[in-house]
Length: 157
Image (cartoon, rainbow, N blue to C red; front, side, top):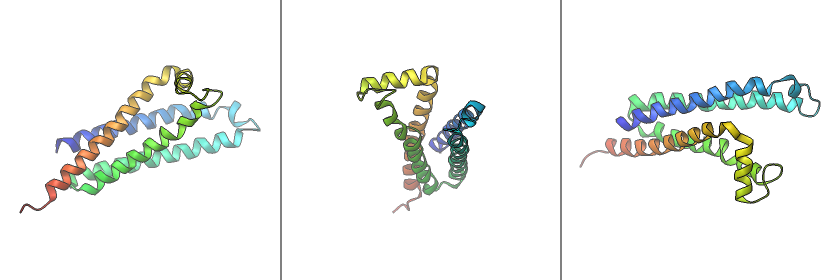
């Protein structure tokens, strides 16, 4: 099925971008000015480790499910990938939104939150938009793939 093939390729691209961004971010997060700070040092190290482990878990689960969904032609891996992408959307997008509605980034309004986000991300906006489109596109493609697989596997009467 072409939809499963396209969804698999986009899934791999999305998680490679996420892993690459994490690998680029780690040296910045583990700078001595953060790790040796008595106020945030312990948090900086533990956050760098736990966020990397979580990212690795998401990427490994997505890779395994996508690898199995393509040849197996079963609906459950595609449905599991839909759930995984919904969890990733919640974890990497929705959880961080309230940050931009309160000081120092925003003033409580939608306009203030948008300006705060753009100021905070500056040159990284294109990467966030790319990841957002890929994440939502993968979710949609896996929904379509799971529907097609489940309809194809139903017995004909």
